[in-house]
Image (cartoon, rainbow, N blue to C red; front, top):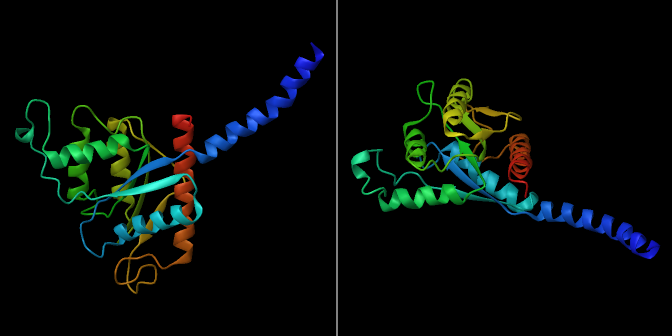
Length: 213
């Protein structure tokens, strides 16, 4: 009997260690969406930078950059017998399969860009594929750096049952002279890269907590 108890005690630390290890190795799939369609978009650059950061220094996190340009304008006349146009179905499936979402949002007229709002609306059509996912927002824009657009996305997320991380926030005031991005929209500022990494680590931790992976 004592031998059996001792054996269990010896095994318990190993089981706990394996549990921590399994959590660290859990593969989180991130759907990344940029609200700007411009070729040299700085927000696209933030997503490209996030992809590289994950590859280099965040094990267990993989970002899929989802192109929203092919999506048609939301129109219920395009819905047939409970299905959507193929390009919309493919987009919705990518969101559904993701564990969490990363939005990179410019700010247009104090609010969310039209392409991003259109994408959000398509994925919210029944059944809502945003529901119960963790999410984070980063932005590069003039003026406040995209604060208003971020807060509007958070408001939209309340109805969609998206769960946003609250901190850290990342607002980048993209004003000339430009030292944060190069001419192609790529991030070249080391401090911004570190701040972006902090956002990604927070998103990873929050996603694991929600999904209990």
